[in-house]
Image (cartoon, rainbow, N blue to C red; front, side):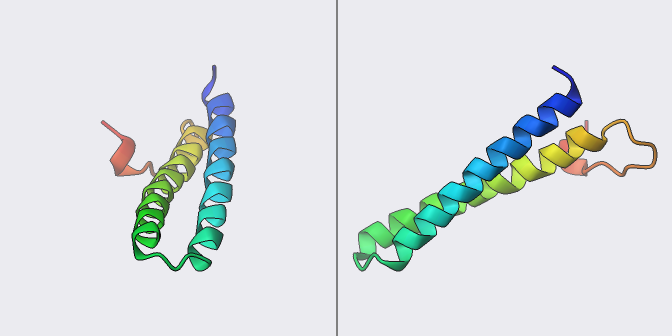
Length: 77
């Protein structure tokens, strides 16, 4: 698998995460139970971090070989 192909996979993964976050946010808006709200907020927070990382990795793998691209220090050795 090439980095370009991998970037497409990261984009697809990010879309799925974004969809799930929207679903959970909708559920959160209609939930009154405090325990369930707390669980939903924790889940949304975790999925949001995963979404951010998937988007960052998609950009990194898309532009890895571009001259002048300043890589995210978080993902470099």
